[in-house]
Image (tube, rainbow, N blue to C red; front, top):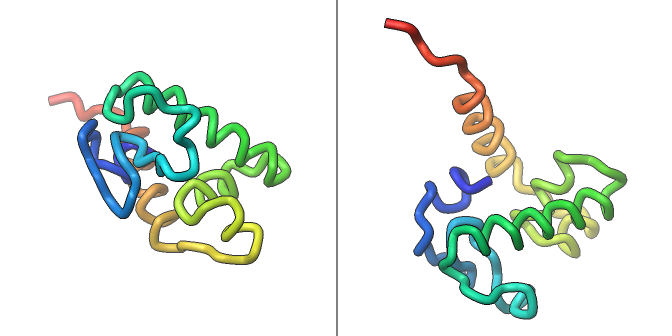
Length: 101
């Protein structure tokens, strides 16, 4: 998620979202103490993903897409296939075993 959301940049900003996990402070202000604190971002982002997974019948795919488009938009039928594709590509990249030279 961090690779896709911010490219691992802890000070990233985009459309009202901040930090490595690109948390929207307008929705999650009560959870975030320091929006650019990496550990805080991971903690809050993980909480959000866990909640979205539970709200979507424990589907990790639904939780990840909900994270991008917002849980309400996802439940109304909005999807972002490009985001899922990029996320899948990043996960595949990080799961690739190292090449021994």
